[in-house]
Image 1 (tube, rainbow, N blue to C red):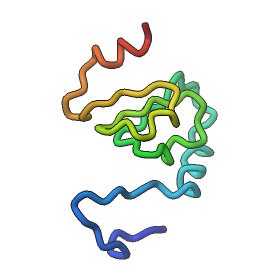
Image 2: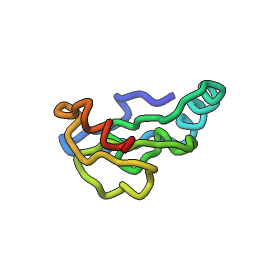
Image 3: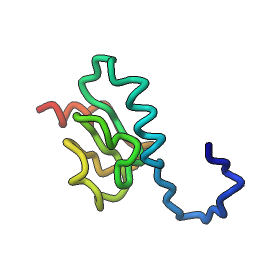
Length: 88
């Protein structure tokens, strides 16, 4: 596994989920009946890479095309209405 001590973090660094870890998570939950999977702080979408119905949520929309649906907003200010708009 990865150890946070192995990295020299800077304030604005983006740390992406390794695809090997994303596949492990997918294999653990793939039999569940999920309608959608939400990737908060999505960046390029590695965490939800193997899922079909992906909702990305991030402050920047650089990778919005990697998701089926996308909310460009700060997670801390996200409301129920933001998600209801995706269904309409």
